[in-house]
Image (tube, rainbow, N blue to C red; front, side, top):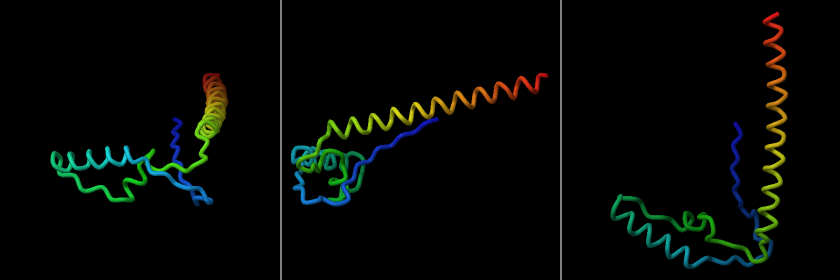
Amino acid sequence: KLECRVQLQDAASGGQTLEVNQDLVAQLAHLNKEWRKEHNFGKLSVADVLRFPGVLAGQGEDSEALAKGVKDLLTGALKEFTAARKREGKKLGEHLLQRLD
């Protein structure tokens, strides 16, 4: 089994200006208001909203380069995983043949 979780978090803004996706914040606020009525949910905090994907964006982010880097890393991990499974299968096959002899 191979699990992959990608979480992006800027350790420091590095002098970049952060931009807030106001439309997304408004949608989140509306959904939170409606769901609190219907499902008795708690209020979203400012921290909850800011952590939501797409709310904050730094200027100068190169999302295509980032996506390519993640894809390359995942491709490498899958190749290593496949190779390890092949080695495991070969050794298991050898062990079973020895047991049969």
